[in-house]
Picture 1 (cartoon, protein in one colour):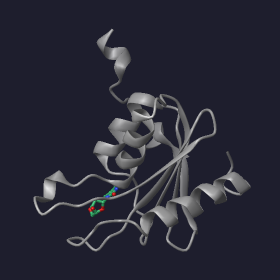
Picture 2: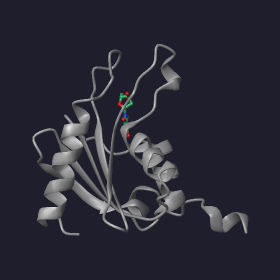
Picture 3: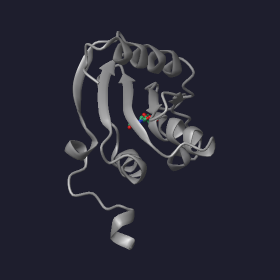
Amino acid sequence: MKPTDPNTQDLIRLAIAASEKAYAPYSHYPVGAALRAADGMIYTGCNVENAAYPATICAERTALVKAVSEGQRRFDTLAVVTRSGGAPCGVCRQMLYEFAPDLQVIIADLDGNIRAACLLTDLLPNGFGPQHLE
Ligand code: THU
């Protein structure tokens, strides 16, 4: 899916809407994600922080866990939005790799400007995955 594709723009819009639900009283850094499954269904997520800081879950993992818990296992595109165009953290990269090593990742800001478009394997080269445990 190309960055200019209207579907990409929809995904970014959904990620921005999700970021408005962020619970981020500690970092004040809202993040939104929209993850498209192979069947076209889209799952959104925001970061949900916790007073015990490490218990925080990122927006990308919120979206992924929502989707997997609904029976989804294959994904093609993720949009993630932050005010600074930050890329998914290492833990999120690893969790996404489990299900979608070929994932296209769109990184945008809260105004919808695309800051980067790449593959998950660019963000996590030579990743460890289920195949290593066979
Ligand atoms: N955060 C995400 O939601 N996704 C990332 O990939 C990077 C970080 C959140 C976690 C925390 O709530 C805030 O951003 C600051 O780290």
